[in-house]
Image (tube, rainbow, N blue to C red; front, side, top):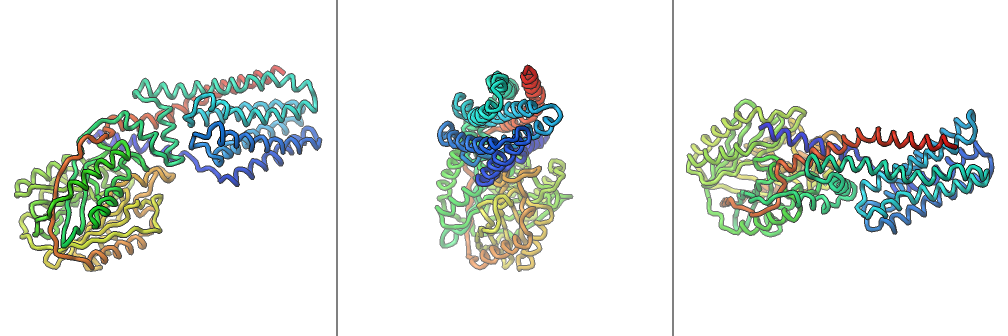
Length: 602
């Protein structure tokens, strides 16, 4: 059990860096801010040192140079790079100008005591700083050839320093000759400093993990900024391995297909729209389209051992599911729903013909990924009672700050054995099934609700109704499960259980220590429960005599990211950020000292 918490921790450490990436201002706001800085801020600082009306022309020319260079950059030099649209390009210039203005303002203040030349020197120091900022941003994030990266990084600062040189030469030709060496050497120094930083990060990946850190970082960043998943998935495909994926299907048929529970033994991750993160909702949507009935995809008994490498691999599983579901359901008898507890463990099950459907929960304690040995245990125990098939799911319906799931495995085992024994002893009777789904438009992925919405399957045995509710989300806040069950009981359902799909499509979308909201953290509980009651009532209203059918099959040769490789990627992303934090001070500290030494020469 030790490997899995370690993997989860390393993935959480990697995903948290999405939270450290900040949102950029709008294009209009950035443009107005640049105009204000250049025309007002620079003009005032320059006028305080050299009171002449030419400073107004200087401010206007700096603004014009910035806008023109940014348009050339995003529409020409970097037009093939989806990251550098005009909004992001002008925002980069805005942050650069904030830095540059700070140096100018400091030079103006100190210039009163040490002479106006200090304003020129600090303006040049600001020029070097902005060069470095732009070089590191563009070089670290753009996939374009290096000459394009360098040209786009230097264009705006160089055009602006040219305008300043013209202004300074109008005051004194001597200044122009003095500052030219710095203007020529600063781009070389900046590019060299950034090259050393990025090279150190890349070497960390190649030597420690056999992975190129910077291409992985660029793909990671591209996904965060633009949602483009192909570059990152390309890396995952290359380092992945082929595996045969087991899929369990429990379907209900009446006069026509009624409902389906699909449980692929693959983890719906790693995050956002990467790999199998969207698999639960994609499986649901495609199955419903193909068979005209409601479908849901609760989480199987596994952790991050198997994450799919790309969307293409999702469709391999979907195709196999749709093809394998073409069989007749024959089981017309079912046991009542039963539950067993042992310490913190809660196990629920119901038998349909020769198939048992069982779920595990530790609510209100954290119910996170569970070891596959639990599924194997249930399958072996089921055979003792003449059952041919066991479909076992993780309810994944409670998450708090303490994750000690591994400490309760023995409790879960004992409860599973007791629950199966109890269900097997009960007589099986004809049953009815109803189903429905709702897709709340007022809940978003950022709030923790996936595009699969809420699905309810109602099973009635001898007038006793059980509600199975599946929410497309990544876990739930503690005690929300109990609120949902209490509300469903008040609606007339004798038993109920609520599940989440563990979709990671809701991960890495928001800031915060997790990078996502479990269901109920950002969603109003009363509103959610109203939706659940609504969909349960709708499912109850279409109850029909039904038969059940189950099948276990294999989706062959699916590209997955194994636990070891996924762990390496997660650790590398985290360590690359930490490496950058440690490397930046000495490299850029030395760069700053070199800039200062150059300035001291005149």
